[in-house]
Length: 186
Image (cartoon, rainbow, N blue to C red; front, side):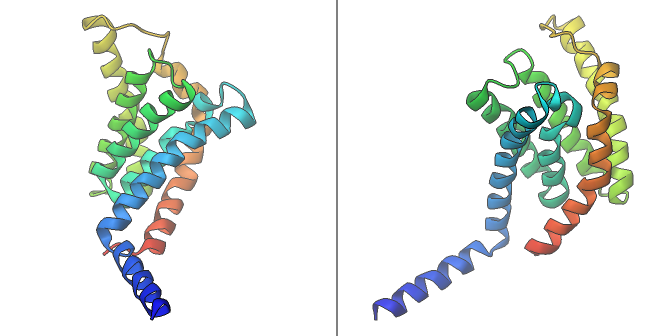
């Protein structure tokens, strides 16, 4: 009797976890955790400049966009940036709003582009247009609103982040397709 009840509860739990909504929630939570953990791992393994070079926080947001859509990816962006700040102090408080804006820009652009183009073209367009829009956001934030800067330059961030951009173009579409295939969203 007890064994049957345990098996029934296990089946009910598995059924509940296999729903599309549960997959979205769990996937979003996992990618937020990855968005917090990856930058830390890169910093430990490759030094303090690894975040700017390899853009690890972008990875979780881009995968969330391609796998779960705009709502999930904006949650991953916000959760990753704020969670990382609260747990590790990175990005700095001055950099936090800029990082959040950058990741949300990428999420929105990739969501729009992926509905019109294949994954590789969508990602390339997102990277190019994202940097252009981010430059505009920085110009408004710093020059018009008078918000503090931390010495950011979009051109310099592209140069420094080129290895990360190459990694994104090479691996994000493959990773997103693999995840989509594995979780079978309905």
